[in-house]
Length: 456
Length: 156
Image (cartoon, each protein chain N blue to C red):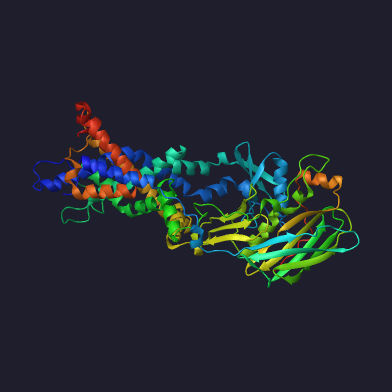
């Protein structure tokens, strides 16, 4: 039959049935716990997919300039921004990838990050945005860490991992037990009554988007703070990942001895440091960095990160829509020498796959087609979460959770091993499994009312 | 059951505790650059009646660079009263390149070395003092103003 109607003792294959109920039970509880989060991820993801179009629209006045002769040197544009924020520290400069795009000067002031948009032809400011007010950044924060910092990041990671458990258990239940036609498997049965239709509207669309959901989960995981960072460290250490500093790891340092750096005397009217301290290398003008970027031929959407320590480097980085155009370059702040120049071609195989995964996940790699496909997966996820929840509400007895009664998981050997495997591969899943077991052992099994409610 | 729990606990805690960090030499596994390094050697004293020689020592991958693609010096005074355009420095061997110039007037000077070798291009800028600094120059140093650059010529 392959549907989720109430298990009955009439079934001949008692073992098969109990395994089925065990898996159903896990799917049931995992679904109820993680559905709200999956809904959040699908909704915020759907919006974030269209970041390029949305930002192009809402920031039009900040972004679009009319080309008029030569662009001013970067140094002069930065000076204009400094005049507006004399107490701020200039942290970044982004030249703008096209003739009609404004330049951006990043300023750090009073623990706030500001972006000043400059018309590169006139040097006039087009306005300032506080990065905290950028709606798409907030949506990204919601998507990536539920606006709750590290804890939120771990929760999202846990949800993503548990979504894999939901997919695996869901596929098991969806898989047709008998040879039967495509109805109820890949096409919902619309004329077999409400109960069947409710089940089909959950299970069938879920199957349709299984591959897409798995893809989004697996491509999203490398960004996560715990699993992702460890994964990135491991692959970078093998030489097959991102080179260091692209994702994790430090940039090289500007290799000049402190005594060779020109110092700034502080006292007015007299020289309060020896002449030999004033003599030395000065920081490379940013215009030279822009020249280097042109000479080395990097994607024009790059941002320059300005060093704010003696050992720091100028870092140029661009993560444009297509993975193949990515670049991370470090330039010695005194000599201007390129210390590291990492392009997509310099990534290891795993690094290239992760890079593609990220641009596909963000929906930028293939432009609008990519966005539409990803949006359909997100909408499918919303449908599956809502229909799953509805399915539960409709079947739920008034005074119980309505979970299927199941024997101990130990009986479902294969499933147990799959769970343990997932628990090892994704330690957060493992931790949460231990937590579930302890909860079951210490609380649920010992308090009769809870036991009855949970149908444990 | 208990054994299973224990096993799972041990396994996951091992994974959590052994959370990996990046190897220090991980960068060696990826594309490496050979940045050119420059050390400027100023004359011990600037005298009024003679030319002084400024030298730069170029090294790359820890070795002296003798066949650099080009080594040009550009020298100017902060107040704009003097500007020696880019001029090739003379290869002296042992990685040294030198140029001799007059430094008649006291003040704050800048030297920019434009050099290239084996794919690495550098343009370090050195600040130095001849004789005494004027009050204006002191002020400029104290304001931490960016050094005004001379004519910006391009290399190919």
